[in-house]
Image (cartoon, rainbow over all chains, first blue to last red):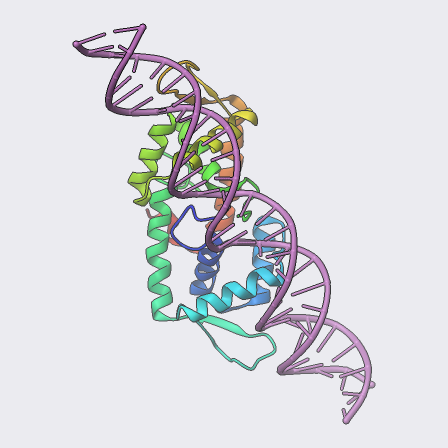
Length: 101
Length: 101
DNA sequence: GGGTAGATATCGGACAACCGATAGATAGAG
DNA sequence: CTCTATCTATCGGTTGTCCGATATCTACCC
């Protein structure tokens, strides 16, 4: 999908997760399972993490751990904020339901 | 993309637009241009409208007009509401920025 | 009617998100 | 050290979103 300018909403979502709290690939898969019912395949999540890291948006907290946690870099937090802004202007502000949870 | 259960976020977005107000294909293209900077191709929008109509979510107000407006059916409004709920649980509620516009 | 402008509709193809399977790495138990 | 469980990583292939080009239609003007 390329409805937004980000490559897929999944990257955006993952970056938001990590911006909020250090998480591993597994953490993210579980979080997504909770939120949408289905657990994304490893082949979905890890390429996304790799890509975000290559862009300099996230970095591993301890690269050699069994469960490698990531945290957002300064650039990543900035990106998350800007993307969220665009995202909101795309989906919201139509007298809609997004503002009363 | 199949991050949500609808076929792409674009369908979701279009259904939300039409649920809020009667709109033609051109109206929608212009609205998207305003919101995200780029105007989607006709080959993007019209198949989406067709699909939504086949699902019974929208219907033409005046099928023979030059600029054919669509409105949401009852089923469409229901679908829009439910999808929005799922959508919000996917993206929000993380102590995030969605609730202070 | 003929001609033009602007909208709708359809088709083939390109690109990338996503999955499933598989392989590699790490920590802990015994 | 070996075995096992769990997480990480990579690769090929599928699927479906989206675009560009093209064709069709309607309304309006002359």
